[in-house]
Image (cartoon, rainbow, N blue to C red; front, side, top):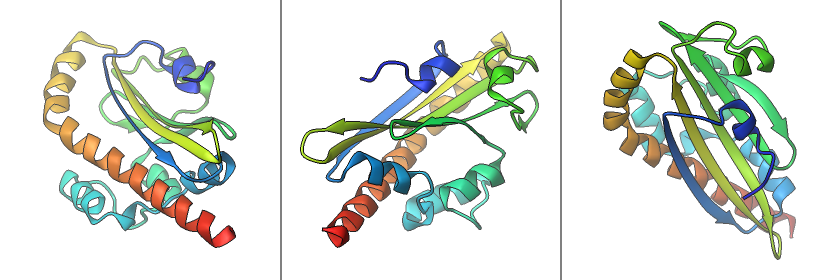
Length: 179
């Protein structure tokens, strides 16, 4: 586990979280670059689950999806971590800057961060993980989001595992082409 993680800086305390990881046979820099904008549509399960949830599915490379859904790229530390987030009261709102997010400048009811973290392992192997943290600021939000989380957590986990598989498969395929 790396120190000084962005996810800890932005949301050290949280109400709910989910974590998944995989090992990739590829150097960390290559994996990081690929993971910044991988194609989520490579998984029909992800596309299907997004559709039934009512999420946009026209542009499913990661950066366009982040934009289309209203998330914000908060910060990155190459080649170790990329952090995405959003906050909401009645609906998702763009985050003007990271200080506003950390200092709760809009008094959100919910804050969410989602990272991709990369750890350099021996022999050009990279551990890739993704963690989602949710902070329910208002007590009623903890209750209502808790019910929602109960229903979506298994599907959210499946989506995260499929994302990691796409990153792993694409990175390893690209690595074989380069060698």
